[in-house]
Image (cartoon, rainbow, N blue to C red; front, side, top):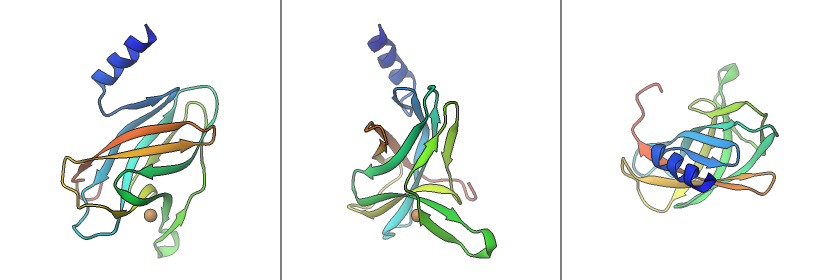
Length: 143
Ligand SMILES: [Cu+2]
């Protein structure tokens, strides 16, 4: 019955990735200007389980490299630094969003169009890998 329930869940929520007690909602790759060699992906990760989980890396199909970065413009200077690990406590969510955490996608193999999908594989400290399908779409200005 669990398999049936899982299949039904996937059918109802095509944008929702699920592994154990981790869910990823609204994975998106904002449409980047053509020729840009690095751009971002965003999502919200939720730990619905009762053990802490730690995100330690990400891979992206169609890109030479993908890293977890954090933007910081405190002090008036915009900087971006690599993040080695993100702990997500039970019941907590971590949001990747413009101006903060993001998945940095580097060196795309091909230009992207609205509606394309990018498979991101989130890697966790316990060895688990969670594939997430992000959709390329135009974000509203300022969001
Ligand atoms: Cu970055």
